[in-house]
Image (cartoon, rainbow, N blue to C red; front, side):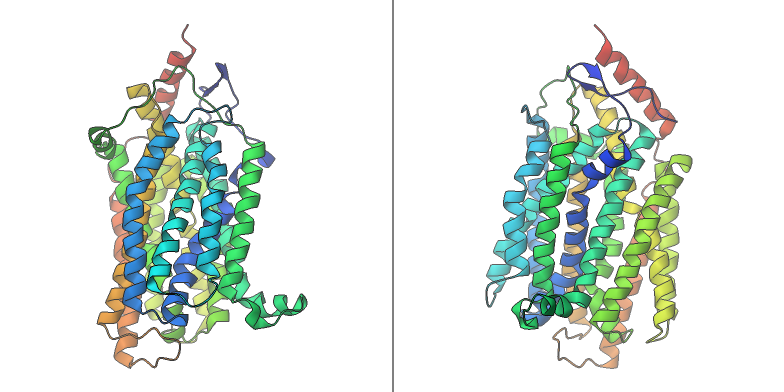
Amino acid sequence: MIATAAPLVEGKPVADRLSGLGLTAFAAPGLCIGAISVAVSVYLTHYYAAHFALGLSAVGLAFMALRLVDMLVDPMLGLAMDRTRTRFGRYRIWLVASLAVLIPGVLFLFDPPGGVTVIWLVGWLAVYYLGLSMVVLSHAAWGSVIAAAYHERSRVFGAIQVLSIIGGALVLVIPTIHGPLLATVGLPKSAITAVGLMGWCIALMAVIGVVLAALTAPEQVLTGEKAPGFGLKDYAQMLFRPDMGRLVAAELCLTLGPGWMSALYLFFMRDVMGFGLAPASLLLLDYFVFGVAGAASISWVARRLGKHRTLMAGAVLYSLGLVALALIPRGAFAATVVQMSYVGFLAGGFPLLTRAMVADVGDAVRLELGTPRNGLLYSMLTTAQKFGVALSIGVSFTLLGWVGYRAQEAAVNTPDAITGLKLVFIVVPILFALMGSLCLVGYALDARRHDQIRIALEARETAP
């Protein structure tokens, strides 16, 4: 069922549903967002800890500290986006501007011109995180006003998630094709590392995706709205709403689970499962391929069961799938493929559902306050996500140091250290996934309630 109410553009109703081609163009920035997520969490942390030998604790703390600082930036960015008024749109202008910050940050992090230090890492992480915040916030907030109806938002954010997973999958192919690709163009393998090549590919995805969205997608500007003010009381009011508070807590838990595994993935696959970089990358590619199928399928399920019920069930099933990891023998590639397919399928639905649900909260807030808060609401979600990523890298790397695990490429670890790695990798994500499901117990903003909100908004916005 599609709600009859629609947002207004210059005082006129617009269609609730984008065409397939239009939706694909709007979702295109998801390619670079997904690619960045995989490359940073899986490869970049490992790259600086092992290749540059900066140390687990130093790298983990650097990523965690910058993420924590970056969390403070998101609410300010969200508020600035909500207050922006230009003839090019509110969120479109921010999405385009993000390229000037994101691309230098990515290229200098992934393809540094020489030796690096912790100070170098921290400096360019700060630039990269600012650019990434601009992309993610502006794109998500724009998506929340492109889709007006409850179930259409599952479709829009499902498309974004599918392209994000495809972007992550493309990054995973690079370690396999790195050598042959450079040989094809007449360059030695030492000309650029696989991680450096990832950075250039991500930069290209960012430009293509942002240009496609900016040139083809409509931006719906709501009429008759108040200029939003802001204070700490307003932020607390949004955070402690029952619907938004549950979503923020669920986002934190469902980021900590997969994010924790991403940070330790290459170490786990090498020393616990006995797989080198190429097979480990193929397994992760399998995870993302099934994530594409999962995002599409879970979006379909959510249109029938409701978003919060689908998310709760997916989180429980995901945690059960992780239990299988402890039972798979070392070197059992086929069994690992099955397990990675299963959890990848389920994980593909987490981000699309939480973001679609925040769009519904945005309508409820606009009805109550008479002013849009979408940028601020999405900043709260990304803040929770960043806090989860920060903790997953900083705490997991610190725990590895405590159990005696050594990350250097040539290091030889004791059986006790490898057992510690296995426990740290498996047990914690299971707990976080279950907690993420519990966070949504009692969530009340379902399809029926949202239809009532949309009808009330339409009545107010079309009133003479």
